[in-house]
Length: 236
Image (tube, rainbow, N blue to C red):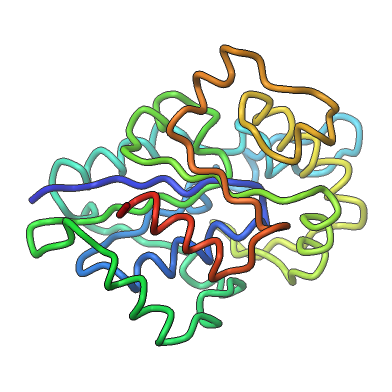
């Protein structure tokens, strides 16, 4: 079986999971691996020295080795490892249910190379582009982003997150103290509205790293327009 790996990355609340779950509805055979299932145990999540808050948005909070190993297992075997369990499937704060059947039918009509011998592996995560051991496993890369104001409002409107050992709700000020600074730090090499916030432009080396990257700005594109862009890129 041929496995095609598509990484859908982006900031928290950018819309990446909405895109991921709509793509899953379009193809015949698929598996989703969520990076949010690969956080370290709660007691191993780093503590921010300034705020003394748990920092769930830094690379050190994630087990990249185990994450990459799961991706490689699916690529080699065409299935998930025995005993695999996902907490992220319980998080339903996405907009995939807002897509109409007519829209789904239109996108399905565009699909090519989607047959019984093809498995689409969709990898969803907010730091797919920050660690080469993961980035290098992706056949296609999508980066979903939005402006600071939009991302902050969406994050504040969200209730919380299932974790390995419980449920996390952002304390007051968490977005400005943790989420946004860590996102900027990990994505300086990726184009998008966050670079305008930093008042910087990507260098030539950074631009070369982002070639072939499909950037979806959900400030400018609604859900159907975002899916149009991704579907046209994957099945042009």
